[in-house]
Length: 219
Image 1 (cartoon, rainbow, N blue to C red):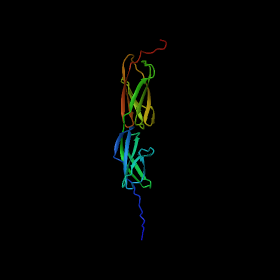
Image 2: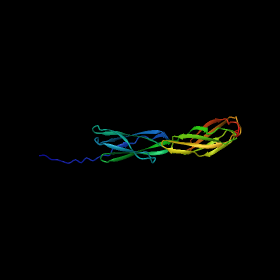
Image 3: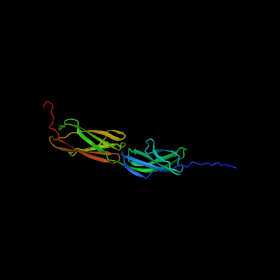
Image 4: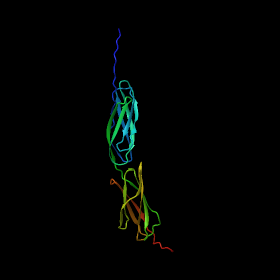
């Protein structure tokens, strides 16, 4: 005669590895590749990356293989961090039976110095007359805020300048405006402008100016 039995096969959660800890400059693209194995080799999988910086969770790009007796795959992702710090990245993987597993890694993000782009007077530079200057800058760490200071090359300085800046992905940009009066015409002054971010990253750029002789209305 014949007989039967019933075998109940329980789903097994995949085993995952988010990858090694890593480091990157703020504003630069960091690439991730996690991996997983699954004893249920016919299972299919989905995944998400949580970057640990409060930005939206993103789906991982899953590439998977289904050889008999052992499925496996990789999960790719990439991200840019707006500011320096240490961030815990979480990878979550689940199969079609909703068995879910998570793993984490730490990313150390380094500050990058901002860059002074241009220094220029926006009017004719006459001695004895206040001259307005504009100073533009950029910073790939777009969450940073900035201040500026000037050594005018005539034994005077200006500090605590605050720019008008825009801090949006994937670059902070801004402009400082300030004025200065030089006393001596036809003399070369070397202006030094120092840009500093909120993490003490700094960049200094020089500009040479030769004020014109005094301007007198009617001459």
